[in-house]
Image (cartoon, rainbow, N blue to C red; front, side, top):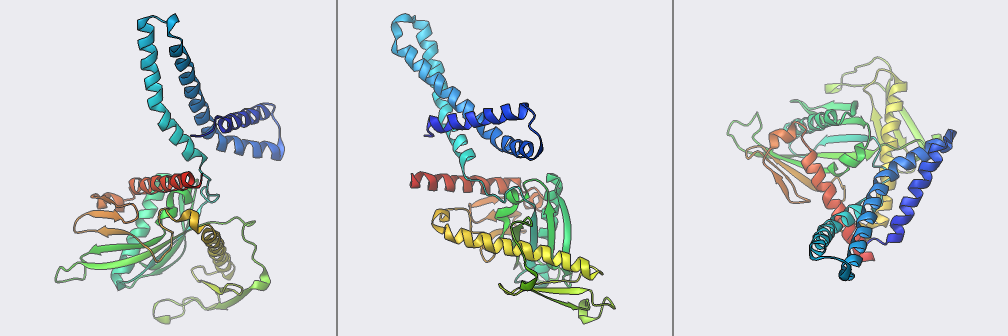
Length: 359
């Protein structure tokens, strides 16, 4: 049970912020307070509701304790109301616990989405294209903006690799559990015998860092320029506009050649490099907190098989939460909320259990 003192402090802080905002404090302080107010608002309202129910229960129990002043009808009504409030209490307590779970500081950020064809040749590239289209349609429903940073087309369609920036409110919170190996089972268009093939594509969802998160020193970079090349190695541009950036301390390499301008290729390459370095830093912190994360939904490891899309049976299965949906066609059209909500709920349950164990 959440201590009442903790709820009282939250409510008191919320009321203090409201009072400060109503006095019209300007400048940086106003922006900071407005942000805290927005973040604290759902927590404070839940705390007020829970506190109110607790107080009502205590008041009704006190009334029933002194039954001499009540007639039979009043006792029955009081007991009925008390029973209803006690039924509400566990739900309100759980809702409050979820709101008090530590927030991932990256949840509200935009992301760099990377999809790469895995095992399966041309069919894997086609599947990578299908996955990208699925996420693009989902982004449309969320009113997020999708901007392709770089792509490498597959020989028969789809993508060997595609990297995009997905920007908007709360993108990482919704997409962070999509990282991992996605497997497809279907009959390829090129298959004459009607045999089902299994292919795979790898998805990585990297929270987009702010400039203050990752500082990249010029001395830590080696930048090579070269001529862009297309399929078969033929030269696409007549100038050295393609850029290869090597981050010397980590050995990370990013190549970018989609733009005709060397400057634009360098800017896009640095954006991808910054996101990968930020993800490395987050992974390092996650490993340090490995014990606390033991029961959580997946590790986000790109080598981990997380989901299977079975076209002959029209089903999609998320292996982390044992959820199977027989509406693959709708999922591929971007209806991902049922899968995503299931993953978020499981993650919350695992973190609540870990919190209970630690107390």
